[in-house]
Length: 180
Ligand SMILES: Cc1cc2nc3c(=O)[nH]c(=O)nc-3n(C[C@H](O)[C@H](O)[C@H](O)COP(=O)(O)O)c2cc1C
Image (tube, rainbow, N blue to C red):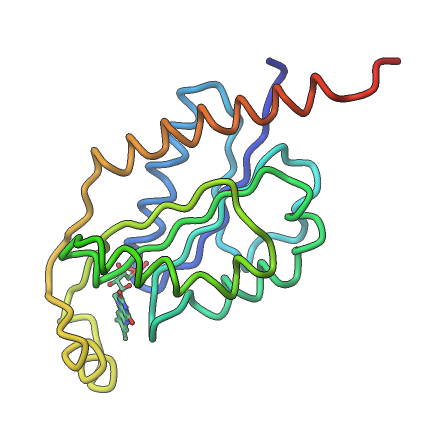
């Protein structure tokens, strides 16, 4: 396949989602993609990429506002591209099917803006020492535990699946392009 350029746009307040974005980028690069990893606020436009991955932590039962704004702002272009979302969540430190479905539901608003091909839902990381009083109250009220719950093997396995899916989708689109 020709060069495929992938944008991974992420929001992150305390860095754990940024590191997941970088791990996904590593896998996609190993699979031959030319990957750019950018904070959502650094991205001017999404044209020029063959696929886009957008990720955000969950806070207050939703993606961070800057991630939602990003999808809303670029939705016309994103709807035409192979698109992938991922969410990073404290609830998934206890990865039950119920928690998975709950976090999946938090994404319904951004899925209405533009429907992705794939959704990844991962456990995140929480360091109570880095939270202010209000944040501590919110986190404790939800019973979110302290610790780094990211399972890098699962994240990389998911990114491999995404690479397969994107390559198939791009090949399909190329095959259906009108020949000169
Ligand atoms: C103030 C606050 C609120 C949070 N609210 C939720 C929530 O509603 N649901 C959830 O699953 N995780 C919640 N989390 C956990 C974060 O999603 C998790 O810690 C994530 O790894 C943070 O990502 P970041 O390091 O990229 O900022 C919250 C964390 C904080 C600090």
